[in-house]
Length: 107
View: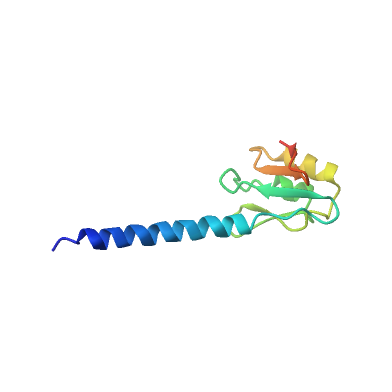
């Protein structure tokens, strides 16, 4: 038995609703500017291979999760200069450091 057009339309609406909820959630969970350094540190999980150079450089700022992807522990645990240097140590440039007014500090 073939599904009716109404059923397919309903599935499309559900898929669209779920996609919109996911986008809203991502926008609402945007990283906040750190209180001390006034920066945002983001790790592009699609680029990160888990080499761990950032963790070796600044273990109080970065760590690797269960998927061997870097994440930020504490963006204020080192100076902005040291964080930019740790980002430069990433062989795939997966770490983005942005100032509080939106200017990209690295890369």
